[in-house]
Structures are given as structure tokens and as C-alpha cells.
Image (cartoon, rainbow, N blue to C red; front, top):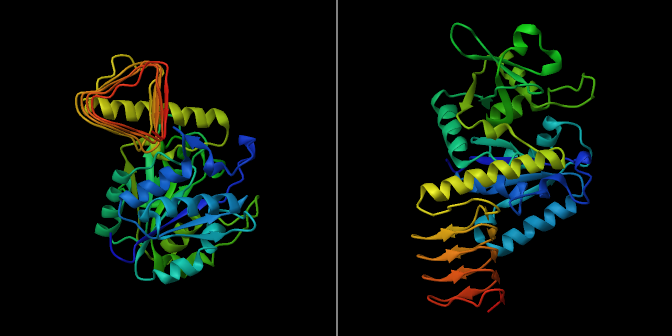
Amino acid sequence: MANLDCAIILAGGEGKRMKSNKPKVLSQVLFQPMLKWVVDASIKAELDHLCVVCGFMHECVEEYLEELKKQEPRYAQICTAYQSERKGTAHAVMMADAFLKAHSGGNVLILNGDAPLVDQEVICASYRQHMQEKNAVTVIAATLEDATGYGRIVRNEQTGELVAIIEQKDADEKTLCIREVNSGAYWFNIDDLLSVLYNIDNCNAQGEYYLPDALNLLLAAGKKAGAYTADNANVVLGANDCMQLNSLNVIARELLLNWHMQNGVEIPCTDGVIIGPEVVIGRGNRILPTTMLIGNTVIGDSCVIGPNTTVENSVIGNHVTLQHVQCICCSVKEHQSPTPFSTVRGN
């Protein structure tokens, strides 16, 4: 990514259907807030300058981000903007006006803070297409078996070029048959975005300012627009209630377990095995049922972890066996195997 390229993460939603006492973006997938999944994907894609647009209970989100900054220097470039009223996605981007102008000349990736399964690969691949096609805007899309509820990607039948994004409620019968949908994530040329952002109106049933309208205005101005179709359909998935949050947990758990097994970790039975996104596992390890490895945990080589074991924010040396053990914020040295049914906390 170029120096002026940056990202805006929309994190102002209240999430009433979550019926939670915290902002929706702080709801957890594999014991990590959805917001952190999105932040980490952006940083892995070398987008260090991030602006998180907060709204409902913004103090909680701001406090969480400050804690991240204290923990690791890679989060140092995160700033926040405040959306006092929730008036739509384009309105949220307007709240980051100063951030956009500070990065004039670059490109901005706009992501939803409650869509945690967007990843580094999708971000980088969509950026490459955005730059190669010299687009003013590139929508990140995906193809779904059931596209109900999503805005449809409408292309020119001859050229395949993006023509419009049509929301379900506005779609005719032919458009409803389209299975390529808008993920709600976009790459914009910043100067092109600023040229139309404040021309977006709220003449709709909800009285809100919608970001897809920026695409229509750019097309009307003769600018180029494109759509990158991700191979990974999970990029469109978010969570509006606890059932959808559970679905995200199930998908993320399976993705991570498969990734570790493909990299040589033996998991003969996955029942009750949960591995967090930041866990590092060495070679020749076996993970047994009802085992949780979470937080900033590092497992050495040739270990047997489980059954009935939790390791959280800990470093485990080589040739260690942990059976019916809890290790919390501790370090276990090579060949040291705590007694079963014990707890090791902070050494």
C-alpha cells in the first residue's frame, strides 16, 4: 500500500437486537471483539493509518482502542471519529472528513466493524484490482447461494463492468435473481470520494445517507467503478443478533482449526477444541478434545495439549504435556508438565 492509503472502520452501530450492554462491534468471535478482527486484517494488509467511527457507547470503543495501543505499537496509528447520530453509512464517513483530507491523494478502504471475516487476502487482492483498473471506487463483492437481504451487483451484460448496486427493496424480479452481492466494503480514491460525498442526499424511507449512492454519483460524473468478487463468501457476513454471532463463531472456529491442521497440527477429534486467531502453534503438536487456546498464546514443538485444558495468554515450551490443566498468563518451560487438575497462573 502507498503511504497515503488508509482505512475507515464503521463501528457506530447500536446493535439493539444483540440485547447487550456493550457496542455491537465489541461482541466477541472466538473471544476477540469483532472490531479487532477487522483492525488486524487492515494492519496485516499494511494499512497502518486507521480511523474508527464510533457512535453508540463510543467511550467503550475508544477505551478499548486505547488499551490496544498500550499493548502493541502496531496499533499506534489508530484514531477515532464520533458519529453523534446514526444517519447511515455515508454520514458515518462524513464524520471522518478530517482524516480523509489528511490522506488526500491516496485511497481509502471502508470496512464494517461488525464483519469480522474479511481478511488480508481479500483486502490486498481488491486493492490490486482497484489500482490496475484506475477506479474511483471498487466494491468488494461475493457470490451467495441465497442473496436475500443484500444489495445486488448489477453489471453490463456485454462488458461485465459495474453499472449499479441495487438494494433488495428496490430490485425487480430480474435483479433479484443476481447472486453477486455487495459486502458493504469499498475502496475509494479519496479525492473522488470527497468530490461527491456531500452531494449524497437522504431522500429515502429511512432518511439516511447511504454510501452506495456515492458510486452512482461517481458513475454519473464519468468516473470508473468496479467490483472485486471475493472467492471467500464469508466477507459479507456480519452479526445483528446473538444467533448470527454464534454462526460467525462456528465459521471462524472451523476456518482456524482447518488452517492449523493443514500446517501439521494433529487434532484427531475437534470436539470442544477452540483456537483463537492470535495463537501460534509449533511443529509436532497434538490437540485433544475440550481444549481452548486463546489470547496471545504460543505453543512450542512436540506438545500434547488436552483433554480438558485451557491455555490463555501463555507461552508453552517444547515437549510439554498439559492434561486437565489451566494455564493463565504464565510460562511453562521445556519438558515441564504441570500435574493434571492444576492451575498455573502468572508462574
